[in-house]
Image (cartoon, one colour):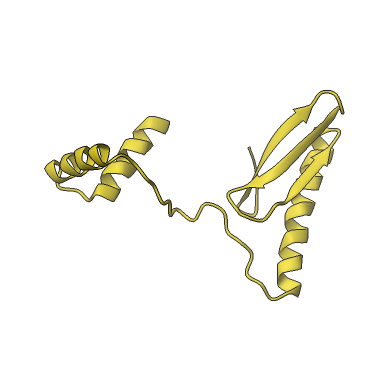
Length: 107
């Protein structure tokens, strides 16, 4: 994953075209970049973000920020009940309990 000015880019390699191509993740706007070398890719990634920020500034539009920290999550009712019960037993909010569980999963 690439990072620049708080934005993240996911990269893939196309072995037929012999090119790296990427896209920003965590925002709705579709912003892509590509390069034939890692150096070209890094420059294109940063240029794409700078161009996006300039475009927003010229139009007096706030740029999207990736990964706001808010997530709408749907789950089965029985799972919701189990999680809420476990959170209550530990005397924490359901939100805190789920955050702690997820943090342990990715550590």
